[in-house]
Image (tube, rainbow over all chains, first blue to last red; front, side):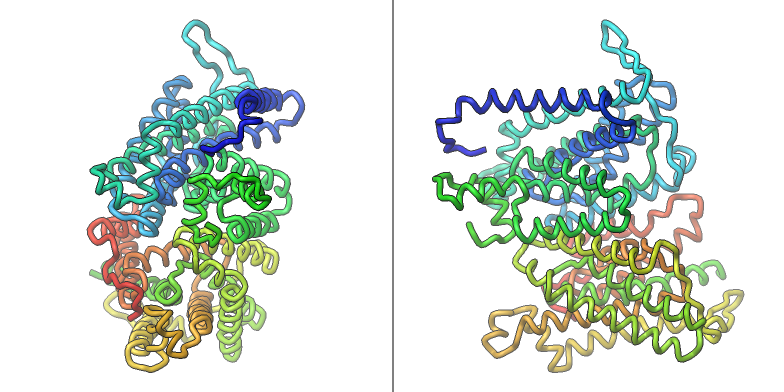
Length: 346
Length: 293
């Protein structure tokens, strides 16, 4: 993140981080051993929500445009995987189909919506997402209509040399964790590429980037397709978890969730959406019996974050450090975010 | 022919209600530059207020007056409270962040509505005279539809004329276009913004009363209407009142014609037409920059 890292802890950090990441993965894999079915399902859903939020941040955090239709791409992946699995295809075929169809639908979104930017982009993607929602809700023969697709499941997964059978929901949950980690890793690698650096440049100053001879439209288009691919893969992974895919997964209020998670965690850091989606999953889980209060709590937390820490939770650490005057300037990306939301302390 | 006439009548009626709701949204956008999700929550609470007054008094004539006063008061006060307490702090943010901030407010309002009114839907009685009407060919036109359509036209024309030709309307336009210059001429810009939110609240309240007798009032009302109204406001050209009126009618007509002639096909007309219009006119039908008229 920061280019001027202090040297005392610098050497230890990568090792600590790797160890931390491994500990999280092991803990996730051990969840079924210590908890109930209910918790396992919720943690699995949270993993899918994290992948979705990260996929959203490819186009938002790096591309600088808000897609208000991302849940419909997640749902597209879910429906495609569900239909493939219910017709007897294997896990890999279902995931591949989900990814391909998601990327194609996403390309269609981008083709139309990228003619505009800012609020118009947000509203056009919202409308296109609603088209997916209405089709899912009313194309009964294919999508199962209002009640959705049920009985979606995976009983085994082929690894080429051997076939692993997945006898119960806990086994599929472990597959979700492994695949989820792979997707997060893939997006992390993507965030380190020249492609992402250029994409950030289009966000910060699209006029200058265009003047340098780069095609802003093309970069954003490619970013949107990557983003859609991962959103659809997250949906494909989610479908067999509860065995059910339903239209509300695609509706616009579902599309608000990855946006809110990203804002809560902070779009300026790769891990921001992970933090945000995790916090939301925790709120959802612990407030699940409080129906109406749950919504109020979610809304209130968002307002607090927007008003008090417009860069998201992951920006707080940076702010505290700056406040103490221990020498580190804010990272470029954080400056951008703060500037983008009109904070006065840049 | 009768089928077409029926579809057009339905489209005009629902388009007029959506316009009443969207009018507040577009005025607030034109002046404050904020696309306000919370407007949906305000509208929903107004509709609940109207429906619960009407339900309790089982539809006596005077109760409709109480319902109008109650709904408009609730909506206007709530709008002002939201602007003063929260939304005011969003003005410095980019549009996307304002959108999210007001979405958070919508969540809070929806939760509050559930606590106050419960999860069961409210049904308000329709006044007797409104269900009467006249026939055009085989199509029966009730007075309710006539009232709604007339109110829609009156509200659109009234707003446009007020902003163009009165001094108070011109003050609002001045505050929208040149806030700094307006301030130096002695216009209290923050107060103008608050009053514009109150005005938006009044429209949301009226739309809530008009809608209440026509459909079940439940918790999905705010988010359903706010999405349709966003479509209308954006397609019409952000900030343009006449644009919002035209867009409300065009989108609702598309919706009801699709419903009539393509009943088996998923009802995507509203969003499809919206996307098509924005593809060819990305800034909406009547694009204006911050000028409300």
